[in-house]
Amino acid sequence: MKDLNWYFPKSIAEAVDLVQQGKILPHAGGTGLLPRGFTGIGGLIDLSRLPLHYSKIENGSVEIGSMSTYAEVVSALMAINPEHILVKSLRNSANTPLRNRITIGGSIAFFPPWSDLMGALLALEAKLVLVGKNSGEFSVTDYVTNKTLREKSLITAVKFNLSNLRSYHYRDIRTKSDYPAFNITILLKQSMNKIENSRVIIVGTVKKYSRLTTIEEYLKNRDVGKINIEEIEKLVEVKFAGKRIDDPEYSSYLAGVELGRGIEQLLRGH
Amino acid sequence: MESVFTVNGKNIKFTFTPDERLLFTLRENGYTEVKNGCQEGECGACLILLDDKPVNSCQVLTASAIDKNIKTVKGIGDLHSPHIIQRAFVETGAVQCGFCTPGMIIATYALLRDNPNPTEEEIKNALDGNLCRCTGYVKIIEAVQLAAERMKNRELE
Image (cartoon, rainbow over the protein chains, first blue to last red):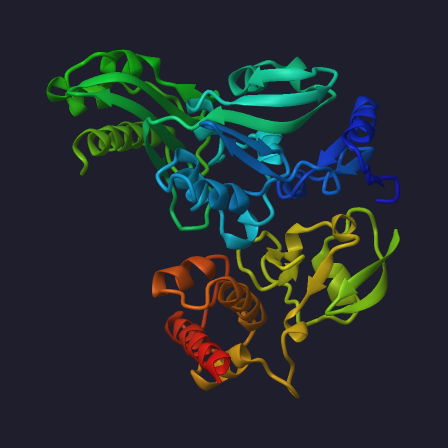
């Protein structure tokens, strides 16, 4: 592999210039790149020397540099809110050594179907700071759905608000450090006996992820006592593609059951 | 490619290909205590400390480790001067075939450095990236607890 060049920029501007050239990929933690291989890649940009390794939490707003690892994100948020959805979703992701290597920027750009990160970021309605061809702040939803946003651009930070939404995260795994077949993220705001607002995301579906707006609508302004978990389970309409671990129909059924359990747990504390 | 790396406190020049993984660079240069296991980041046999963080060297491209500090299990202690953790592993019978041991020692070293009094749950979490097919983990957890106790006592001396 002699024609694969490495670049070691010392500034974001230098890295952006390199990204503009095309066929040169940013290298963050590298864990997504290794299984992909190097076919079609002319070069790699090592981002480790850039000032993208930070977490800032001020006035209820969180900003995380894209080179922060999963372990660092968990550690930063754990100190503020151990129940934060990103703590729940990332602390059991992969395993300890991999969490020291996987970065949030790399993970967003890669977005594998087993991602433990993306459900939480989509539910938090997080924003990404991009530099390069598409400079500015964009929602994570736009980034994952709009391919042109990802071209020749570099993610430098992730931003979201420290919400007071209650959270639930479920990984469908067969062994502790295996890749999950799917992930469920639920954020829910309850005021007195009513559900004010909720966000429900399943990652790993045929469309990569699904936001279950039917369930969000069912829950909105509904009395807690009038929420029927069996009804919710029936509303789960998600399709799974592969048969990597399970039959897609079984996965869909399982997702419904686990989603129901999650909502029940959030509502009734069990 | 060619670059100088710091391994176990010494500066050493390695020659490597741009797509080479650190596991292979280290082993080809004599650091065979870094074991070649699954090559997928699942087993922890190739664990090293990279800038003090435990990482799987099979998941690190060598070029991305330029200018970083690398520590293998021999940088913690060797046969002539074993570390408390290594002694504890031997004494409790936590070493059977020994293939996973270098990675286990690295993971334990990183854990006890950050958390000198880990609970059993914390030990299990810290070692969640290290697989052992011989011991059933019971002796390994005992070894970590023994090492923690002895390291604490040493500090008190």
